Amino acid sequence: MQPTPPARLAELAQQVSDCRLCPRLVAWREQVARERRAAFAHERYWGRPLPGFGDPSARVLLLGLAPAAHGANRTGRMFTGDRSGDFLFAALWRTGFANQPRSRERNDGLTLSDAWVSAAVRCAPPANRPTPAERERCLPWSVAELELLSDVRVIVCLGAFAWDAALRLTAALAGTGDAPRRPRPRFGHGAELAGERHWLIGCYHPSQQNTFTGRLTEPMIDAVLERARSVAAGGR
Image 1 (cartoon, rainbow, N blue to C red):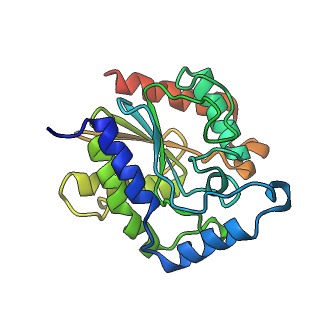
Image 2 (cartoon, rainbow, N blue to C red):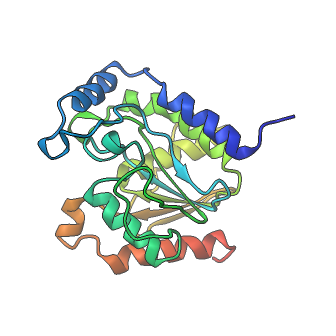
């Protein structure tokens, strides 16, 4: 008997968490976990790669860049424990994808409905800048994850890095290699790209730089999430 999709996702999560393919990222994530920020000195950091999480039957996948050094790298769950996550989860709650507006730790009761949260790179990178080689080593994890998330129809790309990663991801799933199509579809907030299986929607990343300056506002991200729901339900 084949494992059920949730069980297979759990198996994949364990495999992701054990990955040590990128020496620079392994060294950095573990250094951060040892030399904890003063505000979190009493906490035990996760300090490992991050699997995605959410509803195994999700039709909407939210794809970020990478875990934050003192956010997800500390808490062990994507976007959990930092300001970007505060902004994102509040938006997911307002639009009906989450049961609560905030997530500060891995076991705080947060559940997602019809949404899955992941990232192009699974380890916290120095200066939040993974290299192209590190991105490519992570791609097979995203391919395996999306293959198991068979109901996903829309990928919301949180930032240009995620947009490019999603282009490579969908190309790999389609069997056309991992290089994005040429000319490369341009990222922009609200940009859309229809594919045979997955529809991409661009959204500015909910970083503090974007949210504090007003480049990304609550109505803007809410509109993207509502659009994602509509497309996933068969709307155009």
